[in-house]
Amino acid sequence: MDRNPWLQGLLLLILVNVWLPYRRGRALHLRLGLMLGVIPVLFSVALSRFGEHLIVTLPAIPIVGGRWTWEAALFGASSGAALLLTVIAFGVLQSTVRSADLISLLPPLLYRAGTAFALSVAFAPKTVSSFHAIVEARQLRGQRSGWRSSPAILLPLLLTALEQALQYGESLDARGYGNRRRSRYRPISWAASDGIALLSAGIALLLTLAAHPASYNPYTNIVPSAPSILSVIALLLLAAPAAVAVIAREDHAADRD
Amino acid sequence: MPLIAIEDLGYRYPTASADVFANLSATVEAGAVILLRGPSGSGKSTLLRCLNGLVPHSTGGRFSGRVVVCGLDTRHHPPRELGSHVGFVFQHPDAQFVLEDVESELAFGLENLGLPPPLMRKRIEEVLDQVGIHQLRGRRIASLSGGERQRVAIAAALVMHPSGLILPAGSDRGVRLGHRGLRALGRNTGRTAASSRGHAPCMAQHRRHDVLAA
Image (tube, rainbow over all chains, first blue to last red; front, top):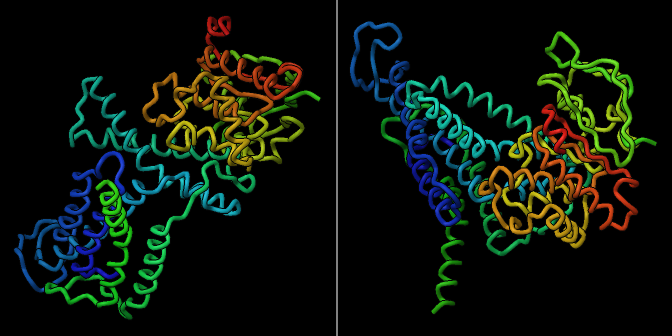
């Protein structure tokens, strides 16, 4: 997808709408999201000298001195939005799809890919729980847990996450995953709504490929160009799961009356 | 044929400068209960990981000699092939859990064996009774206490009807549960007795009073 802000905004709305009816457990971490959105803007505006529209000219301070431009700020915002959208998309996947179903859908030949995929899906919640455990342990020892202590938290967090990933892979292996064709304790049943979601996602993929511009411009213009109609339709098709959920809910409401 | 045969086993971790152990030989007969005792860092866990092939398949390193489990040489059979012969309970149950609720977790290993759903249901019912965790069946794993998680981890290993069970350090209660489960398995599956049908629980342990208690 290109970096058109209209498309990014539309995709954000769609992702939130798909997440809402299927959400389980806690909401996505707002602070983390804001960090992902804001940090690229700061980096880009301070380091990039690209563009004509000036915000301010700083004295010759090493690295950050010189012309700060709106184009650089926009580029940072666009990168931040892309990062944020990627994280939210994984968050939606995480909260709507059970890792067990993903593992069982893969054929045994792809067991290495299946292990890697299961690891990637399980990574976020395991890391979040490790983070809370480390912060709690620090608090028990009377140590700080604010921003200044982040290096002291991030290093054990990284090591714990790697260790857990290894053990998780070992557990899959030790319990016979990928040895032969798996059977299913609870067979996965396909409903009409699943078919609609799959079909619309497939069409969306084809339309996105068809609408892909011949030349890719990573920078964003100050005045964004109108998105192509094909891209908008492709994105709207991704909202199918949200639409199906709303229709299903209205059906249940009618039954109750 | 012994259940486990260890011949001239030696192992060194990839970045280590010394062997964890060398020229180690032992046999474990069917029905034996083996307790491993030694100071921290003496290689108890490493030895147990040799029994289901995690060493060397997962860790790499320098491996010499051989370990034969149920007639399978661990050098040529990766852990996923040994999984149905040797039940392995991880030291930290959270590292072992793959799925979100207790019943799915118990079914995971059986699904990997490719068993039909009715047989899976039967085995899950059996193991829930054996380990005494019927009340946990529908619970999410994240909501379980430490002790409950350990019992679910043992049940997840027992449900695959292994010939041997490897239990981690520091759990005499776990050893009792595991041993009771294996014996029950022998009875419930119509075998003469666990001790004569090749069920051998093993355990890594280093505290003397726990060894005596177990």
